[in-house]
Amino acid sequence: MVHTRRSRDNALIDVIEALAPVRFEGTVWRVVRKGRSPVDCARAGGRWDDGTFDVLYTSQERDGAIAEMYFHLGRGQPVFPSKVEYGVHELEVSVDRALQLVDLEALRALGLDTSRYGQLSYDRVSDEYPRSQDIAEAAHFLEFDGLVVPGARWNCMNVILFCDRVLPDSIDIVADHGLIDWPSWIKTNAR
Image (cartoon, rainbow, N blue to C red; front, top):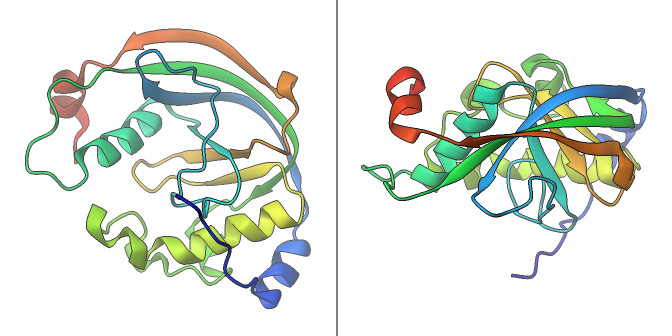
């Protein structure tokens, strides 16, 4: 699928350009399909990428990463897929120029309607994603390495890396924590 970039919002660029980049160094978590490398980037066209550049979605909390995948795998279906095999991986990440938006108020200041942040059904994400994609694309344009933003599915921060801005030695695989026991996780955590 070919993605085209919408016109940039100059006011948004001005606001983001005024924000100082921060260094982010720490442990993050990533969930991927069995057999896939946890450091493979993609142009998913998700909340924080418009499909014009590669990103790596991660979370600072293990359950945050799992909750994101749970949402996407369910895709609004009445029954969760029973045969999916996904593993959870621990990574160590280090970037020098992250755009950190510490809370919903910081997102609101950039024009994101946070009243329903992360609450829309899967078939309505197009109502929520365009502005967050604009924010990410503007940050990418301004040569930030990625974003540190509130998670939409779990009370934690997510770290989204812009893969063409991150040096290869900035991401290390610490551990493969094995396959997710979905029935157990859902019983304990599904909201």
